[in-house]
Image 1 (tube, rainbow, N blue to C red):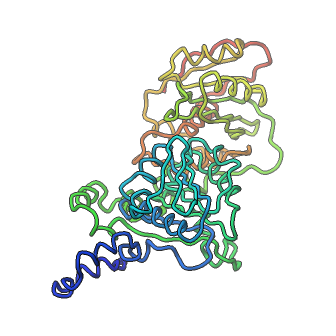
Image 2: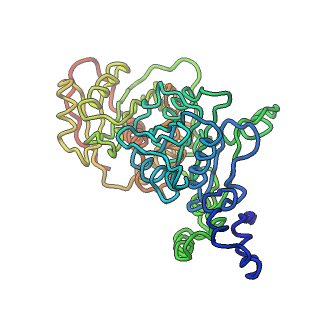
Image 3: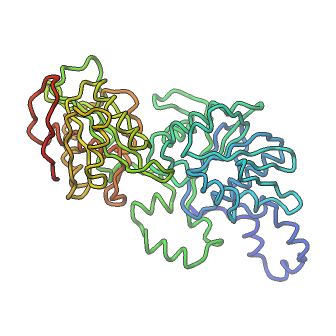
Length: 448
């Protein structure tokens, strides 16, 4: 479906003699009139929604839409605004200082004051916007807001925690509301937001929609994009599945994901006795803002020969912290072995663990095959219904499983890596006997 043009685009199509009737001063007066430049889908829906979700392809104009919405809300009386991005740099460089960011959309005489050291923007009305990032979800624990703009939420690493904290603080004013602008991915919380925009719930019962959804493609904004950009993205994505996501803004199903949604079996009732329990880790070497997470996943093999995922204790930790959490998980679940990938950390991984508990049973694994090749046997176990998820707090792990496409994202997430190592040891190799509580020798290295 062709997007409706903006008033500016309609003006550009007028005959030259009609356009000549407008002076440069007339045109200049429209520079900061968003209603003139915006396409209809870039303007906020005119009803009492709580969340406006813009799901659109790259280059659609999501950032400009978000910045202009903030400007409109400030002019309408908003007082406390949260600006939330994937990282502190993204909030600063895109949402605030970017070419289509907040500072750029205000007229010169109303330009807000930005204080990077305070993560704060002060507007001409006295309203204040604070910058937050998904890197530190706890920044949003406590502050109150009446408006929020969340950009590229589908790329967030800690989306559930970040959005939960934001939602609990979005409680000022008569009708607090939030705008989410993002290129979509097939994530559960995005699907939930879309479901809340429908007149009926999943059981067919009537519901009052609270979410407004706007969809759009890259091509809707092609008149404002360089021809070279359009040419390059068409060459790169074409009519591919990834192009439908990145350009057309579709939330795709899991057709190309290695793990399917329907394969995840949620265990109900008491667990059987475990023949073995393993804590599998995919360790990060540093804990800087751009570092990977350390995957820490607890898996067990029951006497019924089924695999059970018992816990996910992953996160961004220093080596000493992930070692403590790993040893604590061993104690909590009576695990007999820690298995860890040592491609990057080498002997440091074992040494760090043994500084916490010198008697742990440790197996290091060294990856030679590609991640997809290693994960395929585990995916087959899920497809055959031989693995159940029995622990709480497995949402982020399940999200990674359902969204990892090895064809387009060869580097698999850390939680998923840990899961694969653990279930491979338990179910894709001959199982070792159950051991008692005595100190265990180190297993020989596994090479896959």
